[in-house]
Amino acid sequence: LFSLLSLLPTPAATIAKLQLFYKTFLYLAFCQDKKFKIPKEDASAHFPTDFGGTAPAAVSIKSKTLILIRHGESTWNDTFNPGGRNIALFILCYIPNMIKAIAHEVYFFVAGKDSQSWFFDSALSTKGVKQIESLRKFLQKEKLKLGSGQFIDKREEDAIRELLNVNGAEKKSMVVSSNLRRAISTAAIGLSDRFALQHANDDILLLPSLQEISFNPDAQTILPPKGIAQPTWCDRSIPGVPVDKFSALIDTQYHTGNKALDSTGLIRLNEFVSDVFSSKCEDRDVVIAVGHSLFFRSFFQLFLPRSVEHISKKKKLVNGGTVRITLGEVTLEDGTKVYMIDPKSIVVVYGGFGKHTKK
Image (cartoon, rainbow, N blue to C red; front, side, top):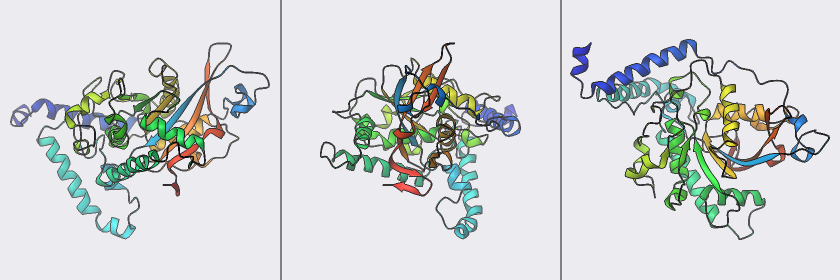
């Protein structure tokens, strides 16, 4: 084995990829990530009525604006999911597409490209890039309307200012992302006009708590703890973000590596809301979070009152979909912190849930 490894251009990278294969086998066999249930009780009893709660008395509450963006389609999705393609065509092309995917993976392995993969921590696909470029173009178009009075809901106008970090934004915003490559690329491409402004301390902060809820290989991060995020194929021609500046745009100080084998989605959902109100985000009023479909659907299921019926609890946010909400935090007498989404605050900025889309 060692003799074979020595023939490869970068044996260390090949060993790293073999370790990833091994860890993926462990996750497929033993991961508990999706084995949780949404608790029957919610936090509405601790929140005031004007926030959608049922607390009878005045409550001291902290709140932050969240803007959630789902990543574009990935190479994993392109291989295994029909998406919007004709089912018959997808089945007909399945084997050729699988051969193409395996060929890419073999090349990355033999070439020692341990930061690249088709299946593991899958990058955006060609379709996924187009989806996020559509989001970027939408933001450019909406920016031209700022201050014109054309927005039906002022919160939509606020969201555009916050996403693009342009003059007139009433609140300071920041961008956080899952530690998976497709989310990082989505943030960099979709919000490239924001980063092109080169405001001080405006980067993409990785939060491991946002890692997708899944045991599949595409949900395992390749990036080592506090490592340098390398650009994927789609990050090499982002308008306003030169490829030699890409790695510096990604803040990995809180990146602790892959989620633990005994972690669950419920654990990370609670970690995420705690992160939003922690020192990681404390000086920003608006947190723009780029993440994943199952994570966001579970987020709405967990933090919206159980009595509230909303499409976000049943349908996934579409690729590139962008939603603005208000998240509240209340500290109980024993010091426990509880969290809830204000049901009245949900505003679809772009895309939407399921087939209920806005463009």
